[in-house]
Length: 299
Image 1 (cartoon, rainbow, N blue to C red):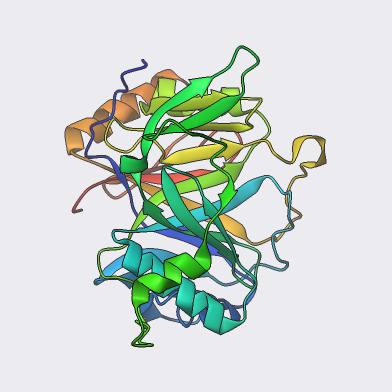
Image 2: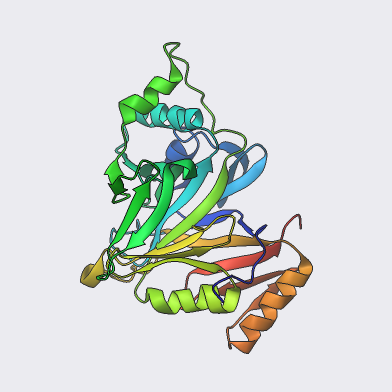
């Protein structure tokens, strides 16, 4: 089980989010983050990069997603160069939106929310800085850098230093980099151990971090360890989202082949998990009700 059952080619596809107002949400997703419009019909707005859909906004939410609600914590759009992250930081700074920035050692990240409270991360992976992870006897996690220094993974990111990567031209790219992709999705959770049993034991992801002390549980593949994550940072303050709240509509897991999809379907059936067939895809939900779609890449 620890080796994972899913192919290393497994990746995340479009993430669908509920919003209270699509035009207001577009001021963040399109105008600030720089996702390109792909299609809009009044009820939905599809956005992406390089012609690929990354985010689909669904109108109809009656209220914003409150902080400390079980549901979406953030969806992470990953960029492939630090300069792309710097352009995103410059757009955020110019927007006047409230945002934050953290250095996780394994990555550098910018955080913002849309007008409906949906959390967003723009992330640049930096695995070359990371040497190993150490877990103490009391469950505390330390990240050890290649120079031997220990890090919490939650240090503030040096945004002025990041912006210096853009040089002195003053030019800021208005659009998200064409090769940006959905790198991970992160939820607030009530019972992360149960969720891990589902994502690892049934779906077939490979486990990564499992720490109640750190408050994070996640899983992925050998190629990308951090794909689906859960936190318990709200602890006793965690609440269910109110009826009609914004948040996650569903996310997409793209599998390598039809054979792999069939194998996952058998494991879901054996576990007694309710599923729905939609054309060649499978719709289901995890034990806490987070919905997702299993599809074959390219279909």
